[in-house]
Image 1 (tube, helix red, strand yellow):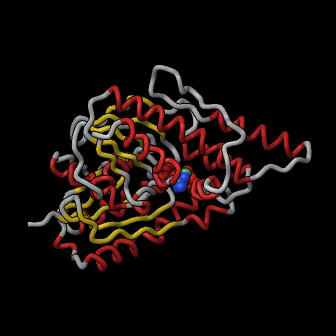
Image 2 (image 1 turned 45 degrees about the vertical axis):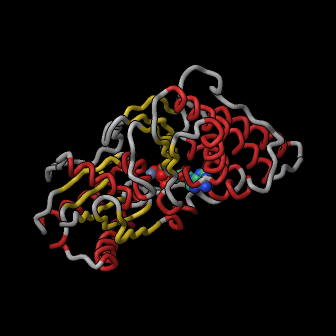
Image 3 (image 1 turned 30 degrees about the horizontal axis):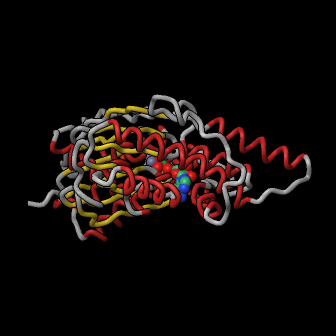
Length: 335
Ligand code: KG4
Ligand code: ZN
């Protein structure tokens, strides 16, 4: 009999519900974005996010079931993100999942959001271990080594800002809307790396990252130019910023992948949607590690969505990692 999982994601500013068959097939993946409500504040406002999740959750569950043509009786389990993320947002998803599981007598699977990001690659190809994942999102920048399903070893991470956070902060200086990663990516494709910003920790013998120095260098350049009444090209600024981020991410990732035995490399998280990064990584693996299979999820599965939660739920179900009704939201959940 088919395994059908109803998955719920509400860790930040997307309310999402998906129905996943056998951990590999998306029957529906509803994503209700709240981004327009947060843009005027220049970032996600937790209280506003929670209220939107309350409004959207039931509608998203109904729509996901309808699109998948599945009834609650057909389901095997309910999966839900329980961390990391905003506590109020997580609690809405968790409460909805508990209520649904209780009402329909289904097991509950609490899922780590970051594990979900990695398993978005499951919709490209079955995962083959050992693998290395580069997780780049608004809150995380990590190199994760995996020797088996559900085993996560962080071998390097950012010492300060996450890559996505750096994109959003420099975007604000350029007067762009939040989140600005996508727009900077588009501007970068039309500019040149003429400012050559620093490449932090590039030659250090570890797999850690740092983006706060780059952010400061960018902000100083823009402010100094502003004071002198000079105007700088947004395209060149974006291209120079992106060149620094991409070079550091690609160099450190390739080094890690050369030093660890791996079959696959997975790019994951919201910043995985970055065209410059996708191209540079694909090319670097082709040239330097052609035996490694590179998995990059399609754009719609890079940002937050419930399909990825359903993909990891397949592993959690096999491992019988069930949650009790007392399971709580964990805003700082780590692997
Ligand atoms: O994974 P995600 O959707 O949410 C978190 O779990 O954090 O990641 C959101 C982040 C934001 O910082 C956004 O600016 C960034 O991903 N992002 C991008 C691109 N698309 C989204 N950054 C660079 N280039 C993009 N094309
Ligand atoms: Zn995320």
